Image 1 (cartoon, rainbow, N blue to C red):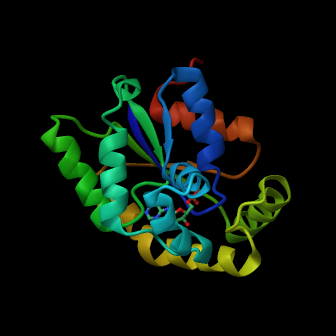
Image 2 (image 1 turned 90 degrees about the vertical axis):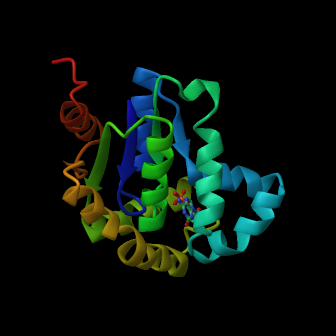
Length: 190
Ligand code: AMP
């Protein structure tokens, strides 16, 4: 299965994506994690991305598209993959469609995890105390939410208009959300 997880920062894309990945074996491709590793390793990509990331801004579309193009050619992706954090802009979504079409492939599902603004802020505050991400301070969180509303939310309509969007209510317990998600994808076992 080729799957995109959409949702604001703190929606639970990583949490739910990791569970699906563990259960079904589709690698979870988190572009944020790839970039954070690149920053830590001080690679050319990391040096290029660090400034934008620390400010809560998006890294350029061309860089991100190139990164996903390469990652989705790795052998572990042959049985499918889960994209977490990509696409984040309409040009990225269009490039993903074009890339898949070139390969004679398509997305099986685009899931939008919906959560309230209060829940986002609460979850990011909780994550800050556990993971200490450089971009989880208050101002940067606010910026990331703004960037999400302006640049990423339009993707929900992009996929909805194409009849490809599956909306999953992302509030409540992790286990309940996971069940709803599995049912929505048609991979539930009860
Ligand atoms: P995330 O872990 O998904 O919240 O991503 C952390 C940061 O990495 C974002 O705030 C962006 O600066 C950058 N990033 C991750 N994915 C993308 C993407 N698809 N396009 C642009 N920037 C991205």
